[in-house]
Length: 220
Image (cartoon, rainbow, N blue to C red; front, side):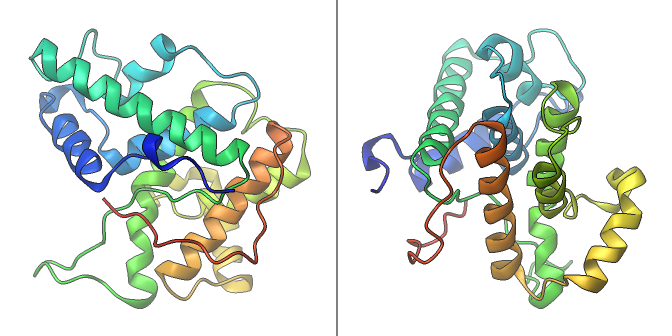
C-alpha cells in the first residue's frame, strides 16, 4: 500500500526546508537537507528512537552551538515543522515497507553541468555523512552484533566523502572492486535496499517488495 500522500513532503517544501537550513548562520555549521535526510533516516533506524529535543538540534548545528537557528522565531518554527514532517514520512515509509527516497542534490562539475556515470554517485555523500553523524551519536547501529546490519551498513558508508571514511577506507576499496556501482540510479537502489535491510534487523519492519516499480525518485 502506498504511504498517504497528504503527509508526504512536497518538492516546494523540500526547497523551503533547504533554504531555511541555509539561512542558519554559517558558524553554526547546520546540515543541508540531504545531510539532514541521512541523519533523520539513521535516527528512525535506531533500535530506541531518541526524543525530538535530543536529535533535532544536531541538524541545526553539527558542532553543538546552543540555540542555533535562522534568527527568526517564525522561520525556526516552520523549519522544525518541515523537518518533523519529513522525519515522520521516513518513519511511515519504513513501517509500511515502502522503499525510501533519499534526498540528494545532483553533483555538478565546476561549470555547473550534472556529473554522469560513476562520478554522479558522489551526490550521495551528504546523505551518508548525516547518517554517520546519527549512527555515531546513539547506540544500536555501528555497535551492532548483527552481521546483516554490519553488511548493509557498507551500502551506506561506502558513499562517505574520502576525508570521512577513516577505517572504512579499506572496506570501500574492496567493495568498489567486488561490487562496483556504475551510476547514480544503481547506487541509490543499492543504498535503499541496504537501508531496508537495516530497518528489518533493528526495528523488525517487513522488507519491501523489491519487484514493485517505484514511483519517480524524489530529488530536492
